[in-house]
Every structure is written in structure tokens, then in C-alpha cells.
Length: 471
Ligand SMILES: Nc1ncnc2c1ncn2[C@@H]1O[C@H](COP(=O)(O)OP(=O)(O)OP(=O)(O)O)[C@@H](O)[C@H]1O
Ligand SMILES: [Mg+2]
Figure 1 (cartoon, helix red, strand yellow):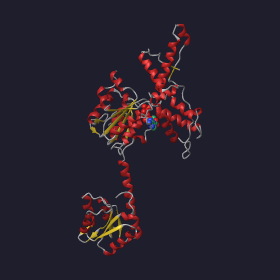
Figure 2 (figure 1 turned 90 degrees about the horizontal axis):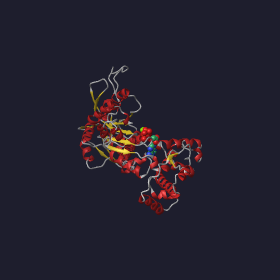
Figure 3 (figure 1 turned 60 degrees about the vertical axis):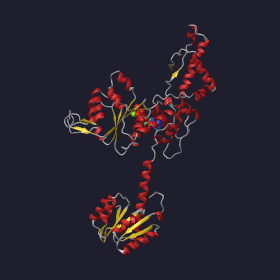
């Protein structure tokens, strides 16, 4: 059945040996616009169902030579999932319960009211339509952009990887600075995996001291330590048939790292203070904002565990490397934090937007989100201007040249100007995420002019200008 069927396209088979009842149902449902056929015995039911596309079967419990429940059972065994409404004169709960257990949609008690039949049949079809809509939704190709905002090339890459790995059980290590959306990615992966109906359990590995963390992750047996009054399940057990998200995984102690390695290899562990081995079916996602490879080199993080976690890596780019995503995010958060629910979207002035785009966002998307939330409140739903913004003084590089000392130590004007030029090119490119066309626009240069200047720096092997110092 497709979801847009009209009544006259819906075919109902009425199976009742009582001529009076089958005629009544036939006429009633035909009048409602359905296409109705009648069967008077079990054999006839099977004959008619074969090859005929019926959308609903009204089935009498008692017919000569055949028991309606047995017919239903046979249909289900054969894999036929046609909705069935049982008709019974015996209002015993056992028949009704049995019918529902075998897979009847509902049952009608004789004698029945005409409206009752019509409503019940309607409900079956409404229910069917809804179910097919849900199926459509589930089968719709997955699009992570519905939840994660951003269209920069770096984010496109993130979407592609999410799409590729979501359905698998692969362990994923999500890396990136604070506030770049690592947890959001973990949620998105879970929601688009076959485990979506199972739990998503989050553990912040940095939040607890070592001993507590171990019992938090793996649970403990009664009496495992002072205060362990009863056995307690850990997060790994709670995440059974679902996903566990290990946030700040770089903070794990050596002992916990070892235990985690075993879970990743064998999917089994013992609760703290216990000897019983617990087996779990869990998908592991992990995140960190530190450079784990570096921690491995320093000997702070087990190399074998690193490789087990880093089967797939998703790196979240910092916001300052994708300034182009800022307007999209701003619009998204403006909508999210409307001044009042239902009020029209708040507007933002061009000048305020420019400042947001040029800003460095050390706290990444989280900081931007808070900034917008605050500005919406301060502007009371009117136009947001830069007065409503509270951006910390830029900590991004600013150039300071002590011209006096340059003169004193004999640096030529030409060389100072080059230094300035180099810095401007560098900074414009950085702000534009490496996009030369955009950088040229910022500098008020033609694209050719910018490229020519960039080539000159490469050709002459300019010494790196002094690193810009913080303002
Ligand atoms: N691309 C995005 N689109 C929409 N919202 C985002 C995006 N990235 C992050 N956010 C939002 O920003 C906030 C911070 O994101 P999240 O908690 O996922 O960051 P994180 O990388 O886990 O940070 P931390 O390392 O500090 O834990 C959340 O409210 C999240 O919904
Ligand atoms: Mg996080």
C-alpha cells in the first residue's frame, strides 16, 4: 500500500460464512468507497489473497472447516503482513488476546455498530500511512547537514566521513579544539547508526579522579571499596547495544588506558573488585582536544590504544579557519535564540556581522553561540549592532613595529615596508581561510596583483617577518 491511496483504491477482503454479516460489511464498506470482496471459507481466503493485492482482511474467528486464528497464524508464518481485523461473537478475552498475539491489528465483537466498523477500518489505514511515512523517513539518505551547520570545504569533508562511517561499528576518534562540535559529531554518528534506538552514553574522562572513573566506566562489585554498598553497573554496561562516547579520552590514567584497550580488543572487562567477566556489544566513539599523537611520543598515552581509537579520525576544523561558515552559524543561532519563542527572527547589522566574521573565535562555535545568545537578549529582539557584542579584545596577531629602533639599527624603509606587506598578505589569507580571491578583496588588490606579490615573496625567499606579537 502506498501512502497516497484514496479509499476506492483500497481493497478489503471480508471473510465470514454468515451471509448476513458478510453482505452487511460488503455494502457498508463499499458505500465508504472501498473496493470489497467476500470469502466464505478458509480455503477461499487463501485463494483470494493469492495474487490479489488486498490492503485489509476482516476475518471471522469461526468458519466452517477452518478456524480464523489458524488462518491468521498461517498467513503470518508465510510472511504475509496484511492488516487483519478479527470478527468474533465470543467476547472472551482469551480469543482476543490470542488474536492480538498472533498479529491481528484489532478485533470486532459481534454484534457491532456500523460506525464502529467504519472507524476501525479508517484507523487501520491511517496507521498504515503513518507507518509508511516513518519507513520513508528512516530510509531517507542521511544528511548530517540537517544538524551540523557549515558549508566550507573542511566541513564538507567532515560530512562525507560521517556518512561513510555512521552505519559501521568502527571506532572513531574525533579531534579538534574546544567548542568545534566534537560532541555534536558523536551524537550525529550515533543517531545515524543502526544503534540509534540503543543508548548513547557519554563519559567525560577528565571530570573524575582515577579510581572513581574506573568504577564509573566498568562498574563495581559490592564491597569493592569503602562505600561500595551494592553492585553497580558501569557506563560500558549501560551502553550495551548502543554507543559509548569517551570525551577527553586523552586524560585517562595508564591503568584505565590498559583496561580500555582490552575492552576495545575483546569487548569484555571485569567490574572493579570483581572476577566475573562482563561482555558487552558497544560501539566506541572518543574525542580529545589535545594532540594524542604527541602524547604518545611523550609516553603519556599508550600507542596501541591510540591506534585502536584512531581507526577513523574526524578532525573538526577551528572556526577561524572557516570564516565563511560564520554567517550561516550566526543565522542559525539567531533563529535558535529568538528573542521570544514565536517572535520574528532577530536581525543583525552588516557592521556587526563583519566583526563576527573577522574575529578569531578561540572558543570556536561554542563561543559564537554564546555571543549570539547574549546579543539577542541585549538587543531585545531588535537589530543587533556591534554595541551588543562583547568580543574579547582580539588575541589574534596584531603587528607592532618599533619604527624608532628600526631606524636606529639601520633598517631601510624598503625593508620595513616589505615586512608590513608580508604581514598584511599573510593575515588577509588567514582571515580568508586561504581563499586568494577573498584575501585580495580585503586588501583592495586585484587577484593578479595579490598573486604577483605572493610569488615575489616566494621567489626572493624573504626571511620570515618577525612573528606578529599579541596586542
Ligand atoms: N557546526 C555546528 N553547527 C551547529 N552547532 C554547532 C556546530 N559546532 C558546534 N555547535 C554547537 O556548539 C556547542 C559546542 O559544541 P560541542 O559541545 O560539540 O563542542 P566540543 O568540540 O565537544 O567542545 P569541547 O572540546 O569543549 O568539549 C554546542 O552547543 C553545539 O551544538
Ligand atoms: Mg565536548
